[in-house]
Length: 406
Image (cartoon, rainbow, N blue to C red; front, top):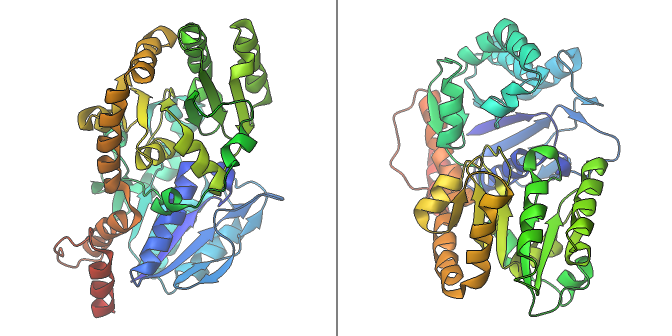
């Protein structure tokens, strides 16, 4: 199958949707599909999750434009139309930008089915930001295009519930975002964690947050909760790993830590990747995601891969699955409500051991080969082919199926 993915950017700083697409595209290519990714724009000097060029069955095209993507661009229209000329199906990632409309126009012109993954953009909280302008844009422009899509790809039941509030009518399906399982197999050099977070001893506990440092993540709540337990857990440290993109927020977090007397026990190593990222996950005692909205929560799913006990706010879409699987604790509220779960996770080693087993079991649902196999069956349905028996747990079986169909 020839698959075209259209996304706004491939920058490392774009968060979960971009990293998830990279894992998915590699898995699809491994299964024998011809996969093309078109990033519609790029920013000066940005580091990308996938480099331009051909890598086996995966082709990453050059970006259509340089600079930010707006509401209309003839260059993006032309680039999408060229890329879609040989595609069997188009998979669009994200909304609120002209790449979705370009894909819709190309799909209609070429008679190619297309799938929209909103990547959380149509959720309640994202819709509430610039509410009127987004309502106007959706009503006048994007709604009609989305209605013409072959299917709407939601990553969680929470996303589907919130998208249904908009009354959109394409067929819906739920398939999670893939998590690159190779991360857990990285050979971490000695001292990698200590270099990123100096001052943490080998026997100290580590409370880890990993992700973008932005307001929606509610990191003030985490810092305040940590200061409340710090006197009981004198060997505990707080690590906030991720790009320091909101400088004012970072300064507020440092101020809260100084006021709470834990400035020497809070570490902000910035963006971590590769061996450093693996080292941080391996060293964590507990992983916390206090965000008031996560459409999926890639870093949370990565923490599950490493068997970390996860404490997640109810706004995180994976929180229900984590609680049901016994892989951690789901909480609702602010710092006061977070204190109890933190104390339980840090003080109860047997609880953490049980969470570790359950977390690693749950993480199997997010392996790239499994997700790619599920998506193939949805693509086949979009193409009008009869359903194929599930073989997603066996990537080699999926690859054999792909070769037979080709």
